[in-house]
Length: 303
Image 1 (cartoon, rainbow, N blue to C red):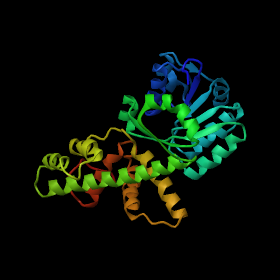
Image 2 (image 1 turned 45 degrees about the vertical axis):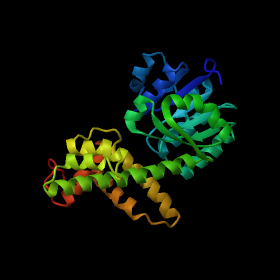
Image 3 (image 1 turned 30 degrees about the vertical axis):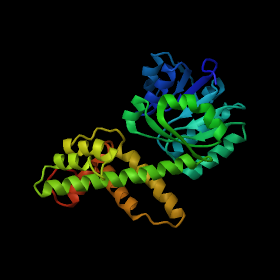
Image 4 (image 1 turned 60 degrees about the horizontal axis):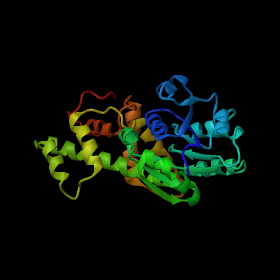
């Protein structure tokens, strides 16, 4: 696939979307963008990207269109809404959704776009803003294998791991599993560091030792340090992780599954949002865990 003739669109220029779109631009693709807040596009427009007046207009102008927005209704709006991509869709257009949304709705969206000759790939990502900026995201793809292979040169400038999981929707299922694992590991890190401190042991030394053994993980490494430093600027906002856990648990309940560990971790995230900590990194759930144990560890967390 030659880069030069392809025109690429990107919708959603937030904490993740901006660096991902910028990687595509830097790699030589012609990039056009749209954002609900036009001022959010200024940094990439200054680097040479072009602006489109609506998602529908953008769809008319590009060969591949990426979306990266907050929630299922947002994806439905930009793809199927009044000024949505579907109204500018052309035969052969490929839409790639990097958002994290409901897998069942993903399949419904893909079916509607297919009626207009559009190929759809769900490709949610993991790795946070650090991975987005470094181009080292894990990208979980659902869709036709041949379409994903055509996209691979683009995906490889945004991620270091690109895995084809299965048919449309499979990427979102994989991301739900990812969010369940991450949330429970974050809770476990918070509990472990709290126990060490409560028993008068240097929690930093505990983390160092654990990183050398079977308990080592990227969560313990990166987020364990956040916990020790009490610095919770987002990587990934708790309110978004809370939303993702809601999607995962909703899918489980629809299939009559019980996920008790995920339910408890989701409760910590939900309460972060309720007490005004939703824009912190989701590793900040340790503050909720400490408060519930009446352990004086962090600055006051509102009730």
